[in-house]
Length: 292
Image (cartoon, rainbow, N blue to C red; front, top):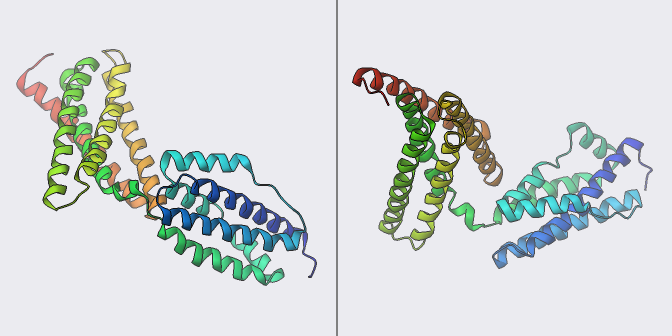
């Protein structure tokens, strides 16, 4: 076996460490992942990563231990956000830079086979993962989108019309709870009419997504003083953008969708509705002559 250059050896050591750590991560996640097929897939991935570790070990001659901090990190992500999100995020963060790959192919012929297996076989296995929460992403998006558009507009309109954070929060809360029940029941009836057995689960995902969004949007109006309604409005819009960014990032990783188009679309709609509603609130207050 030809001696590697220092640069190639450094890359191989990093890859060897990653393969071993990821093998342990897959095994740990498989312990609590639901579904026998999911467990088998995760264990196959763990086995392949361990095999890659052994390949790189031949070149370095070093035995390594897994990075337990990284193992804990992705194990917690899997518990909180789902194992599909965790493993796809892990794999997306371990790609070699082009110059590193070219360096390896020049010195290690076997690296081409390993890379091909990583790109083709492991991607195919990842696509086989079937997690329940991802089946209801559509329901969650429906609930969150509706809450963002409807409540962002309503709170923006209330902000100038009422000019009192407590009144705005009270009005938003009443509207939000009513809309949550309406949206959840509509989702239940729609699922039932389609003959689906998961109607109750689907409506729960929709309702929870809507209610959480309502609570976060109202929060600035609850914590700030009565006269700080404009500050609360800008904080609310900031929360809207953060919610959209967070959820869009989750979907882009878990389902392999593009982040930018969805984020821009949702942000422009929500902020646009807020601006129009704020103007409507100003006009309504002046035309009707209402002074709260």
